[in-house]
Amino acid sequence: MPTSRFLDGLDKNAIAWGSLVASLLVLGLKYLAWRVTGSIALLSDAIETIMNVVAAITGLWALTVASRPPDENHTYGHHKAEYLSAVAEGVMVIITALVIGREAFEAWRAPRLPDAPWHGIAFNLAGGVINLLWAVIVIRAGRRQRSPALSAAGAHILSDVWTSLALLAGVALMPITHWARLDAVLSSVVALNVLRVGYGMVKASVSGLMDAAPDVATQSEIRSIIATSARGAIEAHDLRVRIVGAMAFIEFHLVVPGTMSVEESHGICDRIEAALRRDIGNALIHIHVEPDRKAKHRGVIVLA
Image 1 (cartoon, rainbow, N blue to C red):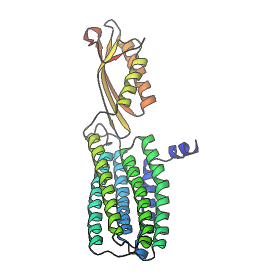
Image 2: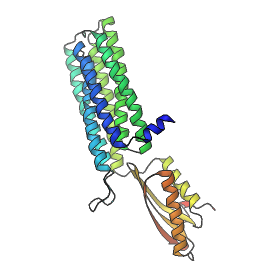
Image 3: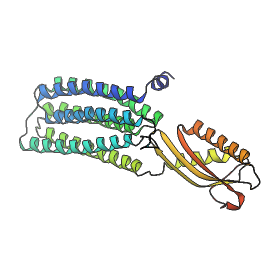
């Protein structure tokens, strides 16, 4: 598919740079929307976009660090830098929610109808369309490349799109209803939505930093690959898996017949590793070979 080929041609750094350019362009449009209207709701939307710019810069740093090869001080690589970026972005989003909440409170105390609302809507809508297109690209690329930083950035941008749509509907109603405090209400809704997104981002990223096990579907897929590619072995047990960014760390004990030679058992391990990397992607795999007397009769049963 054309979209898939396009995403395959973009590396993480290219997407991160694209996010920065898109965020700056959208920020300019949303700033204009606020300037022509004076709407606190549209100001809130612009403030959130400032965080998108900051997040894009943070993401560039994280992806640069994460791409470095292992060294003496980081023998497993630098992949967790992406989680640090995602946590930082989540914290910034939460701070943004608090700032927007304060603006909403002030707008409630001193309500006023926006000036030139339709001009502001046009500027904001243009920014929303750019965000929507870029969010789709970033989210799909994050999934394909298993990048927490890109996935977090895409989720943040997409939340900005829905926020903008809700704001546009509300701002359009203000000159019709003449209810000035609707501006404050809309800003409050923005603050709550941003707070929800920020909490979710921090929660997911902390889980990654704590080496939480992957989802059940991923674990089942790994077990199935081992079971079908370990012909000649008896079982695999004590399977442990963690995924850090685009790298999977997999280790387990492989039980083989006690009379099997080192060469034969090594061949089975090579076959398992090749199958895992083919279906899972980049992976650091550690297999501890044991004789049949070490069998636990549980875990992964090898299929004949």
